[in-house]
Structures are given as C-alpha cells and as structure tokens.
Length: 129
Image (tube, rainbow, N blue to C red; front, side, top):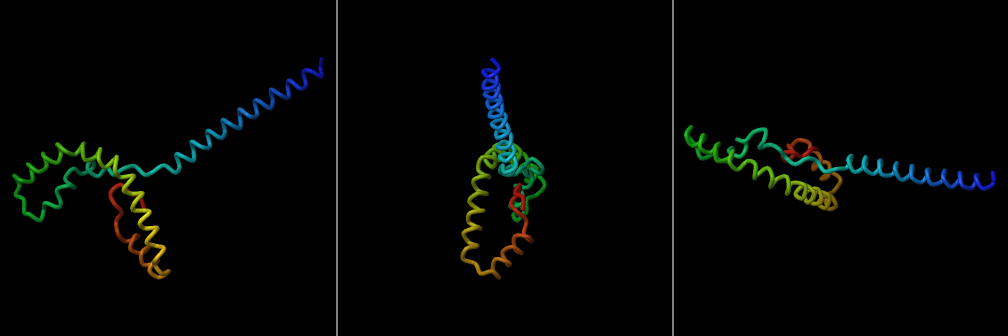
C-alpha cells in the first residue's frame, strides 16, 4: 500500500509544482506587460484647455473673441482628447520607428547631434523622453 501512495503523492506534487510554475509565469507576464506598456496619451487639454488657442494668438484676438474661442475649445475638448487617446500610441510608434530608421543613415557625429537635439527640445505633449 505504501508503494501506491508514493507514486500518487509524487503525481500530486508534480501537478502542484506545474500549477505553481504556471501561476508564477502569469504573474511575471503581467508584470512585464505593465512595465512595457505604452505611455499614457497626452492630457494637455485637460490641464490647459487654452493650449489650442495659442496658434490663434497671432491673429490678435480681442478679449471678447478669446472668451468665445475658449467656449468653443471647451465644447470640443473631450472629443479632441478622445481622438488623441486613440491616435497617440500609433503616432508615437511611427515617430519612434522614423527616428530609428533615420539613425541608420546618420554618422556617429550626426547621431550625437540628434541626441542633443532630442535632449534640448521638448517632447510632444504626454510623451516621455
């Protein structure tokens, strides 16, 4: 009888080990996917709805026009944020691929200049550097 129990207990130990390894793999996979998730989309309109107005500053809007423009921007802010939330990850991926492809034709000195350019120029809203 003890000889039957030993193989059975080994089988259960093997099954429990397999389940534990699988569970740890799931946890590790979730951790890696969390660590390498894309950055959040820009939220500059939430922080400053008037950010969209700056291109219109060159037209010399008076106080009444600026107030009206602010109402217009606030009316469309949620739709713009949603459009950015959808498009931003794709735009960022394309820009990163473009940068990587361009680096293949640059000399080492030009790559250093490109790095300096990236370091001194602000990223797109919501994009970390």
